Length: 138
Image (cartoon, rainbow, N blue to C red; front, side, top):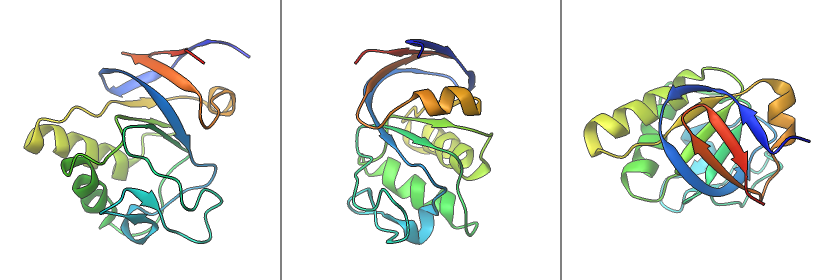
């Protein structure tokens, strides 16, 4: 298991935070509580975890085009994740992060990794994201 991973910075930035990892795709609209920034989809194995102040690691999103608006609401409220690590250039995540930066001035980096790298990142670990480099702290 490597302590340094190289991803692709889709939205660049620098953060250090604890990981909130979702093992399955989620819908931001209906799967997340926009007030508490917690996973509320009862079918998601990570139901109940909060993404506030965390690096949200997820394989992808699912569901409606209202998803970016729901995540934008979470980010703009100050309850959102500080960054995203994704398996693909997920449009819902990219739109929410890009609009949050433009409208609210909140930079929420989005880093794309491959499946092997995704599997190395564990819930509860602390990682530092610097551009396209990811460094495991704990």
